[in-house]
Image (cartoon, rainbow, N blue to C red):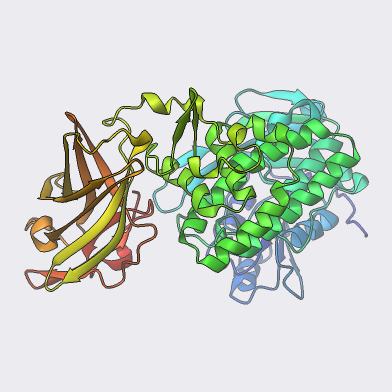
Length: 529
């Protein structure tokens, strides 16, 4: 591979891979060109875009000699190949990467280069800031890594760096990458995990600066690579990259670093797929289970032990392809510690699922005693409520049956128990309720059923954008709690009714709970619960 020769007037090359990014590439380019440090060149590698990306870039570049445009004849299927081309063609002594939908703060190159020149490190890393494109809200990425400035010999001496595997927000010495053969895997997603691990292990010094140097733009329903968890290619590529990274680490005897990397896979990577799994069809769930399970069986017990209890439970259940059971960890995370699993207390220990203690090593892997779940009070930790079946009689008579998880079998048939269906207007915060007369209790569930007039329950004070949350209010032995009505497994098509000649519909929120809204609002309703 031939390399572009360094030129005296370029110290930093910003490489921007682009594919069908016509709507965002302009801002990315603008942020790269407008750096306070002037000895910067920008290389845009167009990965055979089919929209107007190339036109936007050429129009922007114009006569600007600092912007170069390279074009690949065919799409590579990821950002690895375009970035590799950028490394090979870089004229700068250092290179940094910018995705076409992200932005650099004005002083990014200045701050990173200052750190690199002062320390002489092969890699200089700064803080990335996640920016919600819709709301403008921001949060720091991997804040534990950037709590203080420091220079470390390499990744083995600073394994915390594994929590920040992204290749962006970092400056790399070009001669180091080329001379050590540090390249991105091509044709796969999640190539950063391999690249960052290899680079970190081979680098002569990593310098950490605490300043923000990257704006990582994201959209709640975006189609970025990191947001494609609902595609089997996502988990397939992620596992493939992890296997390649494992081979590199094991070949160099870096076992403990592999353990730390694997624990992040268990705690972070797997968790990213839970929502997609909950919404996926059986074919997707089975395909995911087979791919993930095969890899999880190569992960050591040491990595499992580094996880907190819920992350360990999730990974263990996925390893045995118990997807429905694994999804109970999603319920726990999304619904403020509401538990939908069959908790079992035995000989002073608490296990996440009594239904799975027959699996190998289950008592160790499913032990969640340290969560203190036996001490939870009903008012603080509501019971999990699930809608099983429903029907609708015109114009708005809603008939329903469902179950409450009877945590530890505490609710008994002779207890004082009252259930109420509550519909709360999110704007006014007021409830309208209906009694739930049909209740049956056993050791695992409180089954309930009833009927209610939805038109009466939404009341007459609302606007087109009004949303109503549907919950089950539980009053038990002088304790009271509210349980959102979960509809993760319920089909809601046809749940439409009229009130005052207006049409309303039931729908599933992002947390999997039942809510009501005007049918005309449709997908214009932005959800956070």
